[in-house]
Length: 81
Image 1 (cartoon, rainbow, N blue to C red):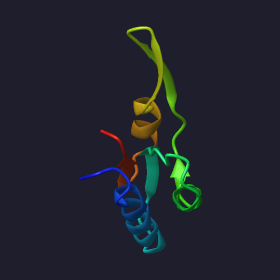
Image 2: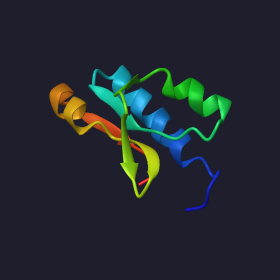
Image 3: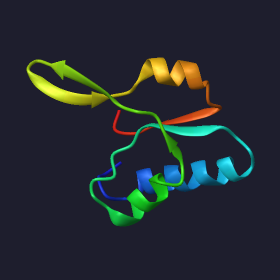
């Protein structure tokens, strides 16, 4: 897959559909790359707080595994693996 083809957007659309069917859906990590429409979709889904970590001297925002395990959603979105 190539950048900018709509993978994240499609993932969010499907998550919103599943959420409307009553599934417990949350965002673990999603990168909008500043795209307005992608950001708008992401705001319609509950997001886990990110955890700030340091890796080789670089600050990163990472999946909050503790929050994920506590919430126990049916589906968690993890973008940018």
